[in-house]
Length: 225
Image (tube, rainbow, N blue to C red):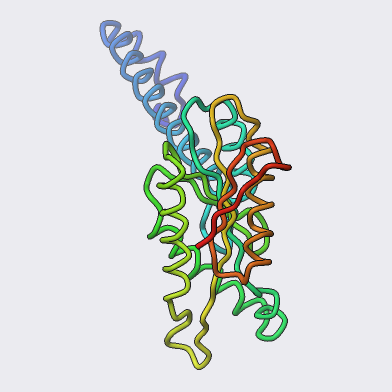
């Protein structure tokens, strides 16, 4: 019965073995504290994992729009130059309309795999919306930015998507690129890249168009492949 009643057990221990009370209590407190720390650690790790998961696009496993918005805030005070690229899959709406969104989602995932394999570890890429993606080519001069974007474009154009399926696909992308320099407004640079993307679409698609001129849209010059 003593074992079933902790109060009586503790009282009897204190009366019979007074010298054991404090070591026993210290040991008990230690295990309680240890258990609490373990539970807290698991809770924190689970919270971090859930937070990370909330920043990942469910279709492509790239950074999602929420994560992109965070990165934009972070990079808005960047002191080193970097490239801003908007990537759009050419004529992708026709794929969704003809073959359905399940095929479309699979193609988006395979395209994202190419983006991962052709960008550098320091670069940031995410799904901006629909079939449009945003890339920040970090710590790079215009030539390096252009080369990275050309590598992406060429890799997509040279890939046979869903190769083992009854209906394989060939896809291309158009990319508009702007440059951010210290003191620029990053949203303006993204808008500049959007203008360059529009030019890429007008000039035949499957191309990289790079805008030069951070803010002066009336004097933007374009280079294309």
